[in-house]
Amino acid sequence: MATNTVDVSVPDVLRPVVDVAALPAAPGVAGATWLVLSEGGRLARWTPTTGEVQDVARLREEQPASEFGGGVRLRLHVSRCGRWAAVVQDGGRYGTVVDLTTGSPAFTLDGGDYCCETVPFALAFAEHEGRPVVVHRTDWNRLDVTDLASGKVLTARDSAAGAEEDAEHDLDYFHGGLSPSPDGTRLYDGGWVWQPWGMPAVWSLTAWLHDNPYESEGGPSHAVYPELSEWNGPTVWIHDGRIAVYDRGDAGSGSVHVLDPTSIETRSPGVRWIKAVVTSPGRSAPSASSPTASIC
Image 1 (tube, rainbow, N blue to C red):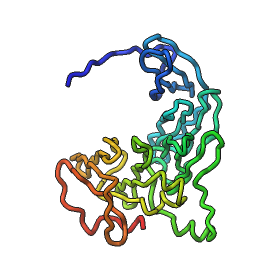
Image 2: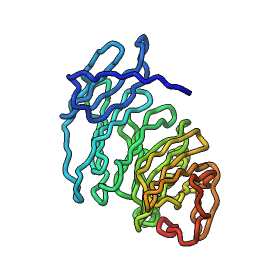
Image 3: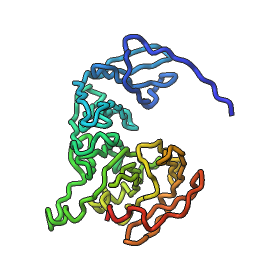
């Protein structure tokens, strides 16, 4: 099917552009509206059809160099409702959530500095019981969910066993890029484990927020796919029951894995695996040597 490509010139006032994200369509506005992050931490709404540029916020921009070189990349995320945005450091530890209705920072994020240069800052906007929430990394091996309106953490691990149970659920897992399913019920995590090895995970966001604060750390719905050699590759939800993941491969020969997050099987030593329905080019069956034990 042929597609029409339209070249649009970014206004000089927005240059240099760091990142852009689509905003929900505004009533009475023809065409798309974009949230633009410019150098210096400027956030602005831009409507290409009218040329209108509206300043939203000015953030303090911090871009410390990575311990391993290369620095960090600022990434812009926007909630589906269009009220909230986050500017985070891919390859870094910090971020800021902004209320776009006021232009004021709502709260800051700190994902920790342990190997943070290896992954995008783990963050995704979602909804819970009709309220917007944000999922974000609070340590290299821990995610939390914060209610955006109240600032309340919804995943506090306040178990009767306290620190002892928290330690039992510690993952040897580096959380990566996050992506909610189209219906918002599941969350994909493109993380990795030593040695290093790409190991995406999927679990139920609904179960996490309704039933079990440890769901993201090995709950009944949590499952992994230990058949990627790399991580940080492109990932897309085709629909609620299919995820396509690209693996660059050790020798640079890429492959695409289409996963079914609704089809889970338990394999020794008790780790739940996500079923792959298609791999292209073809791959051999998963071997017993795959690094499953490292996330138990």
